[in-house]
Length: 239
Image (cartoon, rainbow, N blue to C red):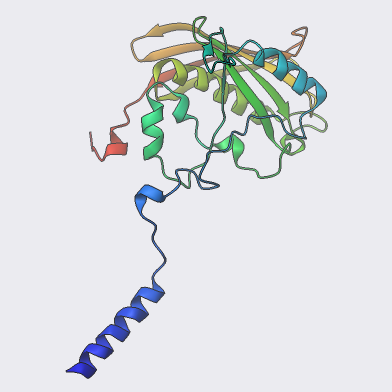
């Protein structure tokens, strides 16, 4: 009998040693890189002086903390760029906890800083508009020396969608209409301006333009349509 118990315990120990360690849910990180989400929209060594200058300009227009730890209100707000954008949609602070940890925002899926999409978004909720400061890395080349049109479309979709989601909650792109006016030099810093045009029930119509930082040159114009979506599937609903 004792021999049977010993053999059973031995098999149990062998089984336990072959299983991957499982951490309690309460201690698991929401993000796959560290216990604290990393803000990819902070300045880094690959940002050009022009990128840093425009960033500083808009950052001074944002909410700040006073010496008394009080919040000084301002018209603009900087949106941190974590692994997923849903956190900064209306109501997204709760929904972000339901997202699978291995998911990662498409424009942040390259570890090498400065190689692809370097950007930061500032939003003005009262005026229902936002501006993105974008620097295109060397891996975004299309025609020699210029940014690929698909990379520009990705940023337009990202920025207009960020504004729509920030104003109304989870959304999906229904239509994106882009007119390329001038080629964008690789490595250049541009502004992506987006504004809410109108709302029709679940539909949001957004206008967008991409310009040089001094706004003297127009690179791209676009209109976008976003539709509010249900997130019931995150809670196991089949409806």
